[in-house]
Image 1 (cartoon, rainbow, N blue to C red):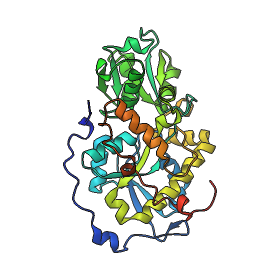
Image 2: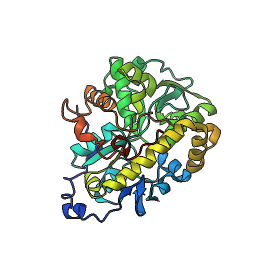
Image 3: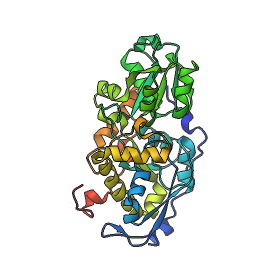
Image 4: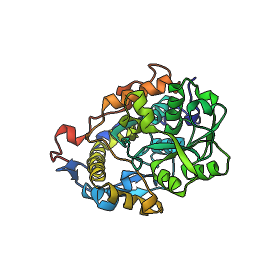
Length: 343
């Protein structure tokens, strides 16, 4: 069964690309590794671990001429709609699934860079599915009829847990999905409103430190069983096709600063956690995050890994989502040689 509820309110795409504006050359130019004049990049205020506010804190976006303008918290279909409308520029969250479902609903988003990468280190694992310490749930077979929290319908939380069920001979309609934010799931689990809480890394460490809960499974384990543990966290950084055509050099500048930030996080993880904890107003010693791929551009192998997982679990019809339509590396300045330094 295909899930289309995530983008249920999208109408057709919001009009054609303004070819005249795109060809006018009014946007800033990416020259010598930075824009020739500043550009205000509108991005949603992130509620989890993300490189955008870390790179801004470090001055990496300012270096390339980008002023980051936060527009408030927004996720899922609301964010996709805001990017299509131009209220936000960056779709800086979500996964291959998110882009595929948005495009299916008429929102022409396109991935221009990879986001996070999964890791076996609990502090760096994409997501962990928690149960109460005394829960009778020990294996997937114990999940039939149980309530599982997900961030929203069609989220990575739902897809990865659906894959876990499938790997163990179950279908996703054998559990009850309950939509709630990560920061609500732990309390709901402790109070008995749900049986399994799917939470991202920034919330996992603090939940475990408080005690009374334990991991059932995590995304690294699920991805490894599916054939690619690191790719189970492969997330997307995207813009609308309209924005890409009108401001290609801004996209280049964004990629330049973001790749630099991602590599900095990999090499300075503890310091990155401190920045994230301050931004998210959580205790540093209880915070976790994610790491990023070592490559500077989108890896088609990881995109196809997600497409197969989506097809295997009925999130898209087989063959309906084409990898080459979901992403582009054409504006990546590391691949073109416009940026030559080795990060």
